[in-house]
Image (cartoon, rainbow, N blue to C red; front, top):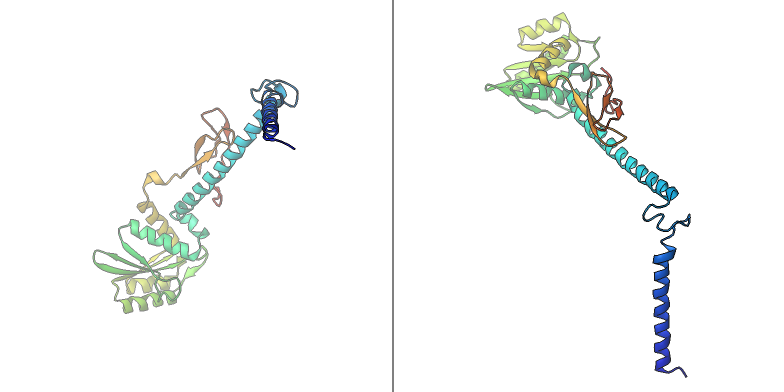
Length: 255
């Protein structure tokens, strides 16, 4: 029979075996790299292991920089998209609802209190505005530059003005108006804002400092942030000396 002292002896032998194995693993097995260089991997004494480790670290860093660069580009694209709504030549790229929102923002910059009406069943007006205690109704149409707004659409706006007891009507379009539409607007207190007039209004509403759009871009070599102007196509040098080629934010066209 196995007595207690035998069991204790076996337990001690097993524990010693584990200690010896772990020591060998730490001091010998794990200390030699695959190229049989002592501390070759841990302390980079092996040239091949050192190069492999450096490549792994570089690839990991580049992957992290690329991910951050994509996030920055998305962030700048969203910001630039908002700025695009304030440039007349970019109104054509907006959806009809975005165009209405852009015009509402424009009149807000011009000192009006504004309220967008529902996108459907708006009753002949897209925006209700107030200034100096007077009520204005604004209708917006995003048409192609070759189209012309005729009198019937202004008549619909005038009907809404009568119903709402508005002081004045404003018809804003990305195109132009027929002569009969201008005559009707003059008779019934409706301002016809064509594309050219809209461009002038934007010039008045937006300060000169905001007209040149700037955006940030990340150097894919080191992660440094470099600023570009939308209208300036020159490459830039980051603080680490890398050449950074301009890439416009997604969704932005080259002006």
